[in-house]
Picture 1: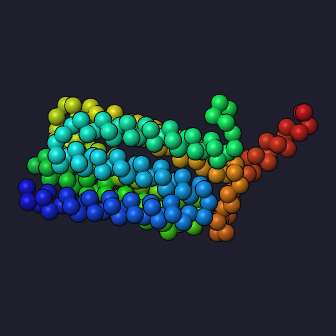
Picture 2: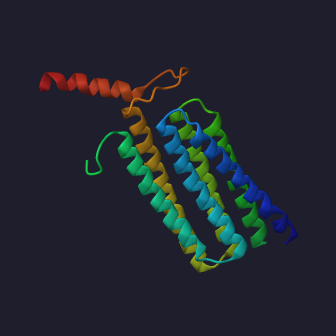
Picture 3: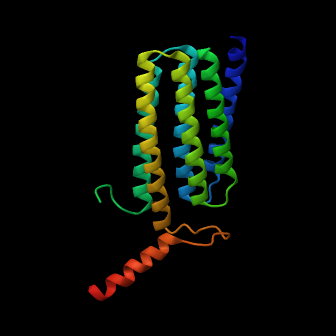
Length: 91
Length: 118
C-alpha cells in the first residue's frame, strides 16, 4: 500500500512532463501538421491520465470520460486533416 | 497483489508515454514524429488502461477498459494515417536525411499511367 502511495504522484508527474513536451511542440511546431500531431498525442495522453485516476480513486464512471475523449479527439483530428488537405468535409 | 501488478503495468505505460513524447520533441520531421509518437503513446495508454483494469478487477471496469482500448487502437491509427496523408498532400517537405518517398513515386506512376488513357 505504501509503495502505490509513493508511486502515484511520480506517475502523475511523468504524464505532466508528457503534456509539457506536447505543448512545446504545439507552441513552436514549424508547420500546421506538427501542431495537429501534438494535439492528437495530447488527447491520447489525457486518456492515460483518466486511467490512472480511475485506478487510484476506484470510481468506474471515470472510464466513460476516457472513452468519449478518445472518440471526440478522433473526430477533431479527422476534421483538421481534411482542412489541411484543402477539401470540404463531404468529399 | 492486484495493486502491485496494476501499478507495474501503469508504470511501464507511463515510461512508453515519456519515450513517445521525447520522440515528438526530438525527431526532425512531421512523418517521423507521427510514427514515433503515435505508436509509443498508444501502447503506453493501452498499458495504463490494462493496469487500471487489473488494479480494480471488477466486471464493469474490465468491459469499459476493453472497449476503450478497442476504440483507441482503431481511432489512433486511422487518425495518424489521415494526418500523414494530409501533410504529404499539403506539401510538407521530408527531412534532409530521408532517402525515399514512396508516396510521391506512386502518385507519379498513377498520373503517368492515366495520361494516355484520358
